Amino acid sequence: MTDFGEARFSRSDIARMAGVRRPAITNWERRHPDFPAPVATDAGTTEPETFRASEVLEWLSARTVPSNALRPGEPSGTTYGDRFRAALGGNRSGGLLSAVEQLASRDANRLRGRLRMPDYVNLLLFLVFVQSEERERWVRYVEHPSHVQSDLDMPGEYGSSPVSEIVRFLDRNPPASRAESREAFDRLLALLRDTDARAADEFFTPPSVSRVMAHALAAGTPGAKRLHDPFCRSGELLVAYLDAVAEQGGEAPEGISGRSPQEGALRLAYMNVLLHGGHRPDLAPGPVRPAAGPPDPPQMFDAVLTNPPFGARVSRVGEPSPPWQYAPTASPQFDWLQYVVSRLTPDGRAAVLMPSGAAFQGGAERRVRARLIEDGAVECVLALPSQLFGLTRIQTHIWFLRSPVGRAGKVLFVDGSGLGHMVERNRRSLTDDEVDRLVGAYRSWREDQERGHDHVGAPPLSRVVTPEALAALDYRLDPPLLVHGDAPMESAVPDSAAARERLVRLSQELGRLHSQVGAIDSVLEERLRRYGL
Picture (tube, rainbow, N blue to C red):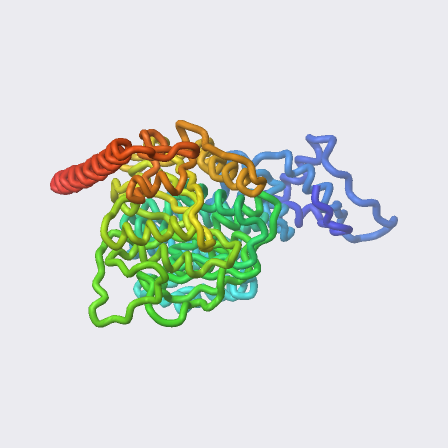
Protein backbone atom coordinates (compact mmCIF):
# COMPACT_ATOMS: atom_id res chain seq x y z
CA MET A 1 0.00 0.00 0.00
CA THR A 2 0.99 3.65 -0.26
CA ASP A 3 3.40 4.80 2.43
CA PHE A 4 2.13 7.93 4.20
CA GLY A 5 5.11 8.14 6.51
CA GLU A 6 4.26 8.80 10.16
CA ALA A 7 0.81 10.26 9.47
CA ARG A 8 -1.61 9.32 12.25
CA PHE A 9 -5.32 9.94 12.71
CA SER A 10 -7.86 9.68 15.47
CA ARG A 11 -11.07 7.68 15.28
CA SER A 12 -13.01 10.88 14.52
CA ASP A 13 -10.56 11.73 11.73
CA ILE A 14 -10.91 8.25 10.22
CA ALA A 15 -14.70 8.45 10.34
CA ARG A 16 -14.72 11.84 8.61
CA MET A 17 -12.28 10.76 5.90
CA ALA A 18 -14.02 7.43 5.26
CA GLY A 19 -17.43 9.08 5.14
CA VAL A 20 -19.02 7.22 8.07
CA ARG A 21 -20.33 8.17 11.52
CA ARG A 22 -17.95 8.10 14.46
CA PRO A 23 -19.61 5.04 16.16
CA ALA A 24 -18.91 2.99 13.00
CA ILE A 25 -15.19 3.04 13.78
CA THR A 26 -15.72 1.63 17.26
CA ASN A 27 -18.07 -0.99 15.81
CA TRP A 28 -15.41 -2.05 13.25
CA GLU A 29 -12.81 -2.35 16.00
CA ARG A 30 -15.10 -4.55 18.09
CA ARG A 31 -16.29 -6.80 15.26
CA HIS A 32 -13.04 -7.20 13.29
CA PRO A 33 -9.96 -8.46 15.11
CA ASP A 34 -7.75 -7.42 12.15
CA PHE A 35 -8.66 -3.74 12.52
CA PRO A 36 -5.38 -1.79 13.02
CA ALA A 37 -4.25 -1.35 16.59
CA PRO A 38 -3.78 2.19 17.91
CA VAL A 39 -0.26 3.52 18.18
CA ALA A 40 1.18 3.07 21.68
CA THR A 41 1.23 6.29 23.72
CA ASP A 42 2.97 7.40 26.89
CA ALA A 43 1.19 6.51 30.09
CA GLY A 44 -0.99 9.23 31.49
CA THR A 45 -1.46 11.12 28.22
CA THR A 46 -4.84 12.75 27.65
CA GLU A 47 -4.55 12.88 23.86
CA PRO A 48 -6.98 10.66 21.88
CA GLU A 49 -5.62 7.40 20.51
CA THR A 50 -4.30 7.56 16.93
CA PHE A 51 -3.82 5.04 14.13
CA ARG A 52 -1.18 4.82 11.38
CA ALA A 53 -2.62 6.07 8.10
CA SER A 54 -0.98 3.33 6.01
CA GLU A 55 -2.49 0.57 8.15
CA VAL A 56 -5.94 2.15 8.17
CA LEU A 57 -5.84 2.63 4.40
CA GLU A 58 -4.93 -1.01 3.82
CA TRP A 59 -7.79 -2.21 6.02
CA LEU A 60 -10.39 0.17 4.57
CA SER A 61 -9.38 -0.71 0.99
CA ALA A 62 -10.76 -4.21 1.52
CA ARG A 63 -14.21 -2.86 2.53
CA THR A 64 -16.63 -1.94 -0.26
CA VAL A 65 -19.17 0.83 0.35
CA PRO A 66 -22.73 -0.64 0.18
CA SER A 67 -24.70 0.51 -2.85
CA ASN A 68 -27.24 2.34 -0.67
CA ALA A 69 -24.43 4.32 1.02
CA LEU A 70 -22.63 5.49 -2.13
CA ARG A 71 -22.20 9.23 -2.54
CA PRO A 72 -23.35 10.96 -5.74
CA GLY A 73 -20.79 10.20 -8.42
CA GLU A 74 -19.25 7.18 -6.69
CA PRO A 75 -19.37 4.10 -8.92
CA SER A 76 -20.29 0.64 -7.73
CA GLY A 77 -17.23 -1.01 -6.16
CA THR A 78 -15.97 2.12 -4.42
CA THR A 79 -14.20 1.21 -1.16
CA TYR A 80 -13.86 3.13 2.07
CA GLY A 81 -10.16 3.10 1.27
CA ASP A 82 -10.88 5.08 -1.91
CA ARG A 83 -12.51 7.79 0.18
CA PHE A 84 -9.71 7.73 2.74
CA ARG A 85 -7.02 7.94 0.04
CA ALA A 86 -8.76 10.87 -1.66
CA ALA A 87 -8.96 12.71 1.67
CA LEU A 88 -5.25 12.07 2.19
CA GLY A 89 -4.44 13.62 -1.17
CA GLY A 90 -3.97 10.31 -2.95
CA ASN A 91 -6.23 9.39 -5.86
CA ARG A 92 -8.49 6.43 -6.47
CA SER A 93 -7.65 4.79 -9.77
CA GLY A 94 -10.64 5.03 -12.07
CA GLY A 95 -12.27 7.86 -10.14
CA LEU A 96 -11.86 10.41 -12.91
CA LEU A 97 -13.07 7.98 -15.56
CA SER A 98 -16.21 7.26 -13.56
CA ALA A 99 -16.77 10.96 -12.95
CA VAL A 100 -16.44 11.78 -16.64
CA GLU A 101 -18.81 8.96 -17.59
CA GLN A 102 -21.42 10.34 -15.21
CA LEU A 103 -21.00 13.95 -16.31
CA ALA A 104 -21.19 12.98 -19.98
CA SER A 105 -24.20 10.67 -19.68
CA ARG A 106 -26.49 10.57 -16.65
CA ASP A 107 -26.01 14.19 -15.58
CA ALA A 108 -25.40 15.70 -19.01
CA ASN A 109 -28.90 17.01 -19.74
CA ARG A 110 -29.23 18.54 -16.28
CA LEU A 111 -25.81 20.25 -16.30
CA ARG A 112 -25.53 21.46 -19.88
CA GLY A 113 -28.69 23.53 -19.76
CA ARG A 114 -29.00 25.36 -23.08
CA LEU A 115 -25.54 24.40 -24.25
CA ARG A 116 -25.40 22.18 -27.32
CA MET A 117 -24.07 18.76 -26.45
CA PRO A 118 -20.85 19.27 -28.52
CA ASP A 119 -20.19 22.54 -26.64
CA TYR A 120 -20.79 20.80 -23.31
CA VAL A 121 -18.37 17.99 -24.22
CA ASN A 122 -15.80 20.60 -25.24
CA LEU A 123 -16.17 22.15 -21.78
CA LEU A 124 -15.49 18.76 -20.16
CA LEU A 125 -12.45 18.21 -22.41
CA PHE A 126 -11.03 21.56 -21.35
CA LEU A 127 -11.57 20.88 -17.64
CA VAL A 128 -10.01 17.40 -17.79
CA PHE A 129 -6.97 18.90 -19.50
CA VAL A 130 -6.55 21.75 -17.01
CA GLN A 131 -6.98 19.40 -14.04
CA SER A 132 -4.13 17.23 -15.36
CA GLU A 133 -1.72 19.76 -16.87
CA GLU A 134 -2.24 23.20 -15.28
CA ARG A 135 -2.42 22.78 -11.53
CA GLU A 136 -2.36 26.48 -10.58
CA ARG A 137 -5.18 27.27 -12.95
CA TRP A 138 -7.18 24.32 -11.65
CA VAL A 139 -6.85 25.56 -8.05
CA ARG A 140 -8.11 28.95 -9.24
CA TYR A 141 -11.09 27.28 -10.91
CA VAL A 142 -11.95 25.33 -7.77
CA GLU A 143 -11.89 28.55 -5.73
CA HIS A 144 -13.60 30.68 -8.39
CA PRO A 145 -15.54 28.51 -10.89
CA SER A 146 -16.80 31.61 -12.71
CA HIS A 147 -13.28 32.03 -14.14
CA VAL A 148 -13.95 29.01 -16.36
CA GLN A 149 -16.71 30.89 -18.14
CA SER A 150 -14.58 33.98 -18.66
CA ASP A 151 -11.58 31.96 -19.89
CA LEU A 152 -13.72 30.10 -22.42
CA ASP A 153 -15.92 33.08 -23.29
CA MET A 154 -19.00 31.01 -22.48
CA PRO A 155 -22.49 32.53 -22.79
CA GLY A 156 -23.54 34.34 -19.64
CA GLU A 157 -26.95 32.66 -19.55
CA TYR A 158 -25.27 29.29 -18.97
CA GLY A 159 -24.82 30.33 -15.37
CA SER A 160 -22.05 29.70 -12.86
CA SER A 161 -23.92 27.07 -10.84
CA PRO A 162 -23.52 24.18 -13.34
CA VAL A 163 -19.85 25.08 -13.90
CA SER A 164 -19.27 25.14 -10.15
CA GLU A 165 -20.87 21.73 -9.72
CA ILE A 166 -18.82 20.21 -12.56
CA VAL A 167 -15.52 21.64 -11.29
CA ARG A 168 -16.06 20.54 -7.71
CA PHE A 169 -17.22 17.09 -8.77
CA LEU A 170 -14.07 16.62 -10.85
CA ASP A 171 -11.96 17.96 -8.00
CA ARG A 172 -13.39 15.29 -5.69
CA ASN A 173 -12.42 12.66 -8.30
CA PRO A 174 -8.90 13.60 -9.41
CA PRO A 175 -6.92 11.40 -11.82
CA ALA A 176 -4.72 8.74 -10.27
CA SER A 177 -2.21 9.21 -13.08
CA ARG A 178 -1.61 11.06 -16.31
CA ALA A 179 -2.66 7.89 -18.14
CA GLU A 180 -6.10 8.15 -16.54
CA SER A 181 -6.42 11.79 -17.64
CA ARG A 182 -5.42 10.76 -21.15
CA GLU A 183 -7.99 7.97 -21.22
CA ALA A 184 -10.73 10.28 -19.95
CA PHE A 185 -9.82 12.86 -22.62
CA ASP A 186 -9.84 10.18 -25.34
CA ARG A 187 -13.28 8.96 -24.26
CA LEU A 188 -14.65 12.49 -24.43
CA LEU A 189 -13.14 12.98 -27.88
CA ALA A 190 -14.92 9.81 -29.02
CA LEU A 191 -18.16 11.19 -27.57
CA LEU A 192 -17.60 14.48 -29.41
CA ARG A 193 -17.25 12.54 -32.67
CA ASP A 194 -20.50 10.72 -31.97
CA THR A 195 -22.53 13.78 -30.95
CA ASP A 196 -21.77 15.87 -34.03
CA ALA A 197 -21.31 13.80 -37.18
CA ARG A 198 -20.51 16.79 -39.39
CA ALA A 199 -17.87 18.07 -36.98
CA ALA A 200 -16.53 14.53 -36.78
CA ASP A 201 -15.86 14.39 -40.51
CA GLU A 202 -14.38 17.90 -40.37
CA PHE A 203 -12.28 17.53 -37.23
CA PHE A 204 -11.35 13.86 -36.92
CA THR A 205 -9.60 11.07 -38.78
CA PRO A 206 -11.16 7.68 -37.90
CA PRO A 207 -9.11 6.06 -35.10
CA SER A 208 -8.30 2.88 -37.01
CA VAL A 209 -7.08 4.92 -39.98
CA SER A 210 -4.94 7.07 -37.68
CA ARG A 211 -3.34 3.94 -36.23
CA VAL A 212 -2.49 2.50 -39.66
CA MET A 213 -0.92 5.77 -40.82
CA ALA A 214 0.97 6.50 -37.62
CA HIS A 215 2.23 3.01 -36.76
CA ALA A 216 3.42 2.38 -40.31
CA LEU A 217 5.23 5.71 -40.47
CA ALA A 218 6.74 5.33 -36.99
CA ALA A 219 8.08 1.90 -37.97
CA GLY A 220 9.80 3.45 -40.98
CA THR A 221 11.06 6.67 -39.36
CA PRO A 222 12.52 5.75 -35.95
CA GLY A 223 14.08 8.65 -34.14
CA ALA A 224 12.26 11.38 -36.08
CA LYS A 225 13.20 14.76 -34.60
CA ARG A 226 10.58 16.92 -36.28
CA LEU A 227 6.93 15.89 -36.78
CA HIS A 228 4.37 17.92 -38.72
CA ASP A 229 0.73 17.80 -39.80
CA PRO A 230 -0.15 20.67 -42.16
CA PHE A 231 -3.90 20.09 -41.63
CA CYS A 232 -3.92 18.76 -38.08
CA ARG A 233 -7.66 18.71 -37.25
CA SER A 234 -7.88 17.67 -33.54
CA GLY A 235 -4.30 16.40 -33.50
CA GLU A 236 -5.35 12.76 -33.78
CA LEU A 237 -2.59 11.86 -36.28
CA LEU A 238 0.10 13.62 -34.23
CA VAL A 239 -1.11 11.81 -31.12
CA ALA A 240 -1.30 8.43 -32.89
CA TYR A 241 2.34 8.90 -33.95
CA LEU A 242 3.37 9.76 -30.37
CA ASP A 243 1.58 6.64 -29.10
CA ALA A 244 3.25 4.47 -31.76
CA VAL A 245 6.72 5.80 -30.90
CA ALA A 246 6.06 5.23 -27.18
CA GLU A 247 4.99 1.63 -27.85
CA GLN A 248 8.29 1.07 -29.66
CA GLY A 249 10.22 2.48 -26.70
CA GLY A 250 11.30 5.61 -28.57
CA GLU A 251 11.41 9.28 -27.62
CA ALA A 252 8.83 11.86 -28.65
CA PRO A 253 10.01 14.17 -31.47
CA GLU A 254 11.74 17.32 -30.26
CA GLY A 255 9.61 19.50 -32.52
CA ILE A 256 5.88 18.97 -33.15
CA SER A 257 3.91 21.34 -35.33
CA GLY A 258 0.56 21.58 -37.04
CA ARG A 259 -1.72 23.96 -38.90
CA SER A 260 -5.50 24.18 -39.18
CA PRO A 261 -8.03 26.83 -40.27
CA GLN A 262 -10.32 25.86 -37.36
CA GLU A 263 -9.63 27.56 -34.02
CA GLY A 264 -11.62 24.93 -32.12
CA ALA A 265 -9.63 22.13 -33.73
CA LEU A 266 -6.33 23.81 -32.80
CA ARG A 267 -7.42 24.03 -29.16
CA LEU A 268 -8.27 20.33 -29.13
CA ALA A 269 -5.00 19.46 -30.87
CA TYR A 270 -2.93 21.42 -28.35
CA MET A 271 -4.51 19.68 -25.36
CA ASN A 272 -4.40 16.30 -27.09
CA VAL A 273 -0.66 16.48 -27.89
CA LEU A 274 0.35 17.57 -24.38
CA LEU A 275 -1.74 14.89 -22.67
CA HIS A 276 -0.13 12.24 -24.89
CA GLY A 277 3.38 13.17 -23.86
CA GLY A 278 4.38 15.51 -26.68
CA HIS A 279 6.52 18.57 -26.16
CA ARG A 280 4.72 21.90 -26.35
CA PRO A 281 3.57 21.95 -29.99
CA ASP A 282 3.77 24.78 -32.50
CA LEU A 283 0.13 24.97 -33.60
CA ALA A 284 -1.23 27.90 -35.58
CA PRO A 285 -3.91 28.83 -38.14
CA GLY A 286 -3.27 27.51 -41.64
CA PRO A 287 -4.91 27.39 -45.07
CA VAL A 288 -7.43 24.90 -46.45
CA ARG A 289 -4.96 24.21 -49.24
CA PRO A 290 -1.25 24.96 -49.60
CA ALA A 291 -0.66 28.57 -50.55
CA ALA A 292 1.95 30.47 -52.50
CA GLY A 293 4.75 32.22 -50.65
CA PRO A 294 7.26 31.19 -47.98
CA PRO A 295 6.41 27.88 -46.30
CA ASP A 296 4.90 27.96 -42.84
CA PRO A 297 6.46 26.69 -40.65
CA PRO A 298 9.82 27.14 -42.41
CA GLN A 299 11.48 23.94 -41.15
CA MET A 300 11.86 20.65 -42.99
CA PHE A 301 10.44 17.52 -41.36
CA ASP A 302 11.49 13.93 -40.70
CA ALA A 303 7.88 12.74 -40.51
CA VAL A 304 4.68 14.25 -41.92
CA LEU A 305 1.18 12.82 -41.46
CA THR A 306 -1.95 14.49 -42.72
CA ASN A 307 -5.57 14.01 -43.69
CA PRO A 308 -6.08 17.11 -45.84
CA PRO A 309 -9.45 18.28 -47.16
CA PHE A 310 -10.22 17.02 -50.63
CA GLY A 311 -13.06 16.74 -53.13
CA ALA A 312 -13.68 20.35 -54.18
CA ARG A 313 -12.13 21.75 -57.32
CA VAL A 314 -10.50 25.15 -56.95
CA SER A 315 -9.58 28.02 -59.22
CA ARG A 316 -6.35 29.96 -58.94
CA VAL A 317 -7.51 32.85 -61.14
CA GLY A 318 -5.77 35.99 -59.92
CA GLU A 319 -3.61 34.05 -57.44
CA PRO A 320 0.12 33.37 -57.67
CA SER A 321 0.89 29.71 -58.29
CA PRO A 322 2.58 27.79 -55.48
CA PRO A 323 6.12 26.77 -56.39
CA TRP A 324 5.34 23.10 -57.05
CA GLN A 325 8.13 21.12 -58.65
CA TYR A 326 5.80 18.92 -60.71
CA ALA A 327 2.62 20.49 -62.13
CA PRO A 328 -0.21 22.82 -61.07
CA THR A 329 -3.63 21.13 -60.89
CA ALA A 330 -7.21 22.07 -60.03
CA SER A 331 -7.36 19.32 -57.36
CA PRO A 332 -6.41 20.40 -53.82
CA GLN A 333 -5.30 16.86 -52.97
CA PHE A 334 -2.50 17.06 -55.54
CA ASP A 335 -1.42 20.41 -54.11
CA TRP A 336 -1.14 18.69 -50.73
CA LEU A 337 0.89 15.81 -52.18
CA GLN A 338 3.38 18.18 -53.75
CA TYR A 339 3.52 20.35 -50.63
CA VAL A 340 4.26 17.36 -48.39
CA VAL A 341 7.00 16.02 -50.67
CA SER A 342 8.62 19.47 -50.72
CA ARG A 343 8.79 19.58 -46.88
CA LEU A 344 10.63 16.30 -46.20
CA THR A 345 14.22 16.05 -45.08
CA PRO A 346 16.44 13.81 -47.28
CA ASP A 347 15.56 10.77 -45.15
CA GLY A 348 12.05 11.97 -44.29
CA ARG A 349 8.85 10.00 -44.80
CA ALA A 350 5.17 10.96 -45.01
CA ALA A 351 1.72 9.37 -44.89
CA VAL A 352 -1.09 11.27 -46.66
CA LEU A 353 -4.75 10.21 -46.74
CA MET A 354 -6.14 10.61 -50.27
CA PRO A 355 -9.42 9.87 -52.09
CA SER A 356 -9.17 6.68 -54.15
CA GLY A 357 -9.93 8.66 -57.31
CA ALA A 358 -6.53 10.35 -57.06
CA ALA A 359 -5.03 7.01 -58.17
CA PHE A 360 -6.47 7.29 -61.71
CA GLN A 361 -7.47 10.92 -62.43
CA GLY A 362 -6.30 12.12 -65.83
CA GLY A 363 -4.88 15.39 -67.13
CA ALA A 364 -2.55 17.35 -64.86
CA GLU A 365 -3.17 14.90 -62.03
CA ARG A 366 -1.86 12.05 -64.15
CA ARG A 367 1.27 14.10 -64.90
CA VAL A 368 1.88 14.67 -61.19
CA ARG A 369 1.55 10.93 -60.47
CA ALA A 370 4.00 10.15 -63.28
CA ARG A 371 6.53 12.67 -62.00
CA LEU A 372 6.20 11.42 -58.43
CA ILE A 373 6.92 7.86 -59.61
CA GLU A 374 9.77 8.90 -61.89
CA ASP A 375 11.33 10.88 -59.03
CA GLY A 376 11.11 7.94 -56.60
CA ALA A 377 8.83 9.87 -54.22
CA VAL A 378 6.09 7.20 -53.89
CA GLU A 379 6.97 4.16 -51.76
CA CYS A 380 3.56 2.61 -51.13
CA VAL A 381 -0.16 3.10 -51.83
CA LEU A 382 -2.49 1.34 -49.40
CA ALA A 383 -6.22 0.97 -50.10
CA LEU A 384 -8.67 1.23 -47.18
CA PRO A 385 -12.28 0.02 -47.09
CA SER A 386 -15.19 2.37 -47.77
CA GLN A 387 -17.52 3.82 -45.10
CA LEU A 388 -14.77 4.57 -42.59
CA PHE A 389 -16.16 8.12 -42.39
CA GLY A 390 -19.67 8.56 -41.03
CA LEU A 391 -21.08 10.99 -43.60
CA THR A 392 -19.59 9.64 -46.81
CA ARG A 393 -19.02 6.30 -48.48
CA ILE A 394 -15.91 7.56 -50.23
CA GLN A 395 -13.05 5.09 -50.36
CA THR A 396 -9.60 6.32 -49.39
CA HIS A 397 -5.96 5.40 -49.92
CA ILE A 398 -2.89 6.13 -47.83
CA TRP A 399 0.07 7.34 -49.88
CA PHE A 400 3.44 6.75 -48.22
CA LEU A 401 5.94 9.21 -49.62
CA ARG A 402 9.64 9.97 -49.29
CA SER A 403 11.86 12.85 -50.29
CA PRO A 404 12.51 12.53 -54.06
CA VAL A 405 15.68 10.63 -54.99
CA GLY A 406 15.70 11.50 -58.71
CA ARG A 407 15.13 7.98 -60.02
CA ALA A 408 12.14 5.63 -60.26
CA GLY A 409 11.87 2.67 -57.93
CA LYS A 410 9.56 -0.21 -57.19
CA VAL A 411 6.32 0.58 -55.35
CA LEU A 412 4.42 -1.51 -52.82
CA PHE A 413 0.64 -1.76 -53.24
CA VAL A 414 -1.50 -3.00 -50.34
CA ASP A 415 -5.19 -3.79 -50.79
CA GLY A 416 -7.15 -3.49 -47.55
CA SER A 417 -10.38 -2.53 -49.32
CA GLY A 418 -12.09 -5.77 -48.28
CA LEU A 419 -11.27 -5.45 -44.59
CA GLY A 420 -13.24 -3.91 -41.74
CA HIS A 421 -16.59 -4.51 -40.07
CA MET A 422 -19.67 -2.34 -39.55
CA VAL A 423 -19.80 -0.69 -36.12
CA GLU A 424 -22.84 1.46 -36.98
CA ARG A 425 -25.43 1.51 -39.74
CA ASN A 426 -23.27 3.73 -41.93
CA ARG A 427 -19.77 3.42 -40.45
CA ARG A 428 -17.08 0.77 -40.73
CA SER A 429 -13.93 0.26 -38.66
CA LEU A 430 -10.79 -1.85 -38.79
CA THR A 431 -10.01 -4.33 -36.03
CA ASP A 432 -6.67 -4.26 -34.20
CA ASP A 433 -5.59 -7.41 -36.07
CA GLU A 434 -6.43 -5.79 -39.42
CA VAL A 435 -4.49 -2.68 -38.47
CA ASP A 436 -1.51 -4.88 -37.59
CA ARG A 437 -1.76 -6.70 -40.96
CA LEU A 438 -1.69 -3.47 -42.93
CA VAL A 439 1.10 -1.96 -40.87
CA GLY A 440 3.06 -5.21 -41.09
CA ALA A 441 2.87 -5.21 -44.90
CA TYR A 442 4.49 -1.77 -45.08
CA ARG A 443 7.00 -2.49 -42.30
CA SER A 444 8.30 -5.70 -43.89
CA TRP A 445 8.65 -3.90 -47.24
CA ARG A 446 10.72 -1.14 -45.65
CA GLU A 447 12.86 -3.59 -43.70
CA ASP A 448 13.68 -5.66 -46.79
CA GLN A 449 14.54 -2.50 -48.71
CA GLU A 450 16.96 -1.37 -46.02
CA ARG A 451 18.63 -4.80 -45.95
CA GLY A 452 18.86 -5.00 -49.72
CA HIS A 453 16.57 -8.04 -49.85
CA ASP A 454 14.10 -8.78 -52.64
CA HIS A 455 10.48 -8.22 -51.70
CA VAL A 456 7.55 -9.16 -53.93
CA GLY A 457 4.73 -8.58 -51.44
CA ALA A 458 2.36 -11.09 -49.93
CA PRO A 459 -0.62 -11.75 -52.22
CA PRO A 460 -3.57 -11.44 -51.85
CA LEU A 461 -2.77 -8.54 -49.49
CA SER A 462 0.16 -6.84 -51.22
CA ARG A 463 2.42 -6.85 -54.28
CA VAL A 464 5.48 -4.94 -55.42
CA VAL A 465 5.26 -3.34 -58.87
CA THR A 466 8.06 -2.07 -61.11
CA PRO A 467 8.04 1.50 -62.46
CA GLU A 468 7.94 0.06 -65.99
CA ALA A 469 4.70 -1.76 -65.17
CA LEU A 470 3.21 1.43 -63.74
CA ALA A 471 4.12 3.34 -66.90
CA ALA A 472 2.38 0.62 -68.94
CA LEU A 473 -0.76 1.25 -66.88
CA ASP A 474 -0.55 5.00 -67.57
CA TYR A 475 0.47 5.54 -63.91
CA ARG A 476 -2.76 4.28 -62.40
CA LEU A 477 -1.79 3.66 -58.77
CA ASP A 478 -4.82 1.65 -57.71
CA PRO A 479 -4.06 -1.19 -55.24
CA PRO A 480 -7.05 -3.46 -56.11
CA LEU A 481 -6.00 -3.46 -59.77
CA LEU A 482 -2.31 -3.91 -59.08
CA VAL A 483 -2.62 -6.53 -56.35
CA HIS A 484 -5.32 -8.69 -57.95
CA GLY A 485 -5.16 -7.80 -61.66
CA ASP A 486 -2.90 -9.01 -64.44
CA ALA A 487 -0.46 -6.12 -64.19
CA PRO A 488 3.19 -7.18 -64.56
CA MET A 489 4.94 -7.24 -61.22
CA GLU A 490 8.46 -7.46 -59.90
CA SER A 491 9.90 -9.70 -62.60
CA ALA A 492 7.76 -9.08 -65.67
CA VAL A 493 7.46 -6.20 -68.11
CA PRO A 494 5.06 -6.19 -71.09
CA ASP A 495 6.92 -7.36 -74.17
CA SER A 496 4.16 -6.95 -76.70
CA ALA A 497 1.72 -4.31 -77.87
CA ALA A 498 -1.16 -6.72 -77.20
CA ALA A 499 -0.24 -7.07 -73.52
CA ARG A 500 0.07 -3.33 -73.14
CA GLU A 501 -3.28 -2.75 -74.82
CA ARG A 502 -4.99 -5.31 -72.55
CA LEU A 503 -3.61 -3.64 -69.42
CA VAL A 504 -4.75 -0.20 -70.54
CA ARG A 505 -8.26 -1.58 -71.20
CA LEU A 506 -8.32 -3.09 -67.71
CA SER A 507 -7.35 0.19 -66.07
CA GLN A 508 -9.90 2.11 -68.14
CA GLU A 509 -12.63 -0.32 -67.14
CA LEU A 510 -11.69 0.04 -63.49
CA GLY A 511 -11.90 3.82 -63.79
CA ARG A 512 -15.34 3.53 -65.37
CA LEU A 513 -16.55 1.26 -62.56
CA HIS A 514 -15.22 3.65 -59.93
CA SER A 515 -17.20 6.48 -61.54
CA GLN A 516 -20.37 4.39 -61.58
CA VAL A 517 -19.99 3.50 -57.91
CA GLY A 518 -19.57 7.17 -57.03
CA ALA A 519 -22.72 8.11 -58.96
CA ILE A 520 -24.72 5.32 -57.32
CA ASP A 521 -23.53 6.37 -53.86
CA SER A 522 -24.65 9.96 -54.54
CA VAL A 523 -28.13 8.81 -55.58
CA LEU A 524 -28.46 6.54 -52.52
CA GLU A 525 -27.36 9.28 -50.14
CA GLU A 526 -29.92 11.69 -51.65
CA ARG A 527 -32.72 9.09 -51.32
CA LEU A 528 -31.75 8.36 -47.70
CA ARG A 529 -31.75 12.07 -46.85
CA ARG A 530 -35.30 12.39 -48.20
CA TYR A 531 -36.39 9.86 -45.58
CA GLY A 532 -34.30 11.44 -42.83
CA LEU A 533 -31.81 8.57 -42.78
